[in-house]
Image (cartoon, rainbow, N blue to C red; front, side, top):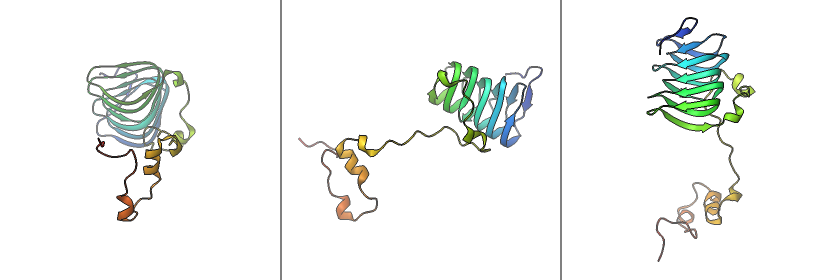
Amino acid sequence: MNATEGTTVIGKSVKILGDLSGSEDLLLDGELQGTIQLPGTRLTIGASARCRASILAHDVIVYGKLEGDIRAKGRVELRNACMVQGSIFAGSFSMEDGAAFRGNIDPSRSEEPLPASVEATPAATGPTPLPLRPVSHLPAALAAVAARPVGGSPEASEEPIAGVGLFSEK
């Protein structure tokens, strides 16, 4: 993981809070919280990096830790020992043995811009949460549990609900 000529390097001791944009390749080895927009270039998140950001770049290579979404028209590579949590929208994806990934991959959305709410927020907090589904889709027994008020009387909380229990009765 060496920086090539024309690559900007952000060292291990540098901490950035906010937006980062540019038009040349970037090697990030420090800490960043916010957004990174490098639409026609390559972003390399180094082994020492801690990054909590929404990313837009042509190619993204991750060696370090990343929490946030990646949008890449080109390729996303997760290298050995990296840790990534978030959604990846990329034209091409590869993951080495030993890399840790928790999230979603969707190649069909790789060319979409970053959502406006993320672009306007300097401190992006990571992956977009999934929408909540209404309780009506749950089986009746689970819907009854979900509908119970929290912190009710002890008598009400000990009332059994049909079909819900730790042990099945025989």
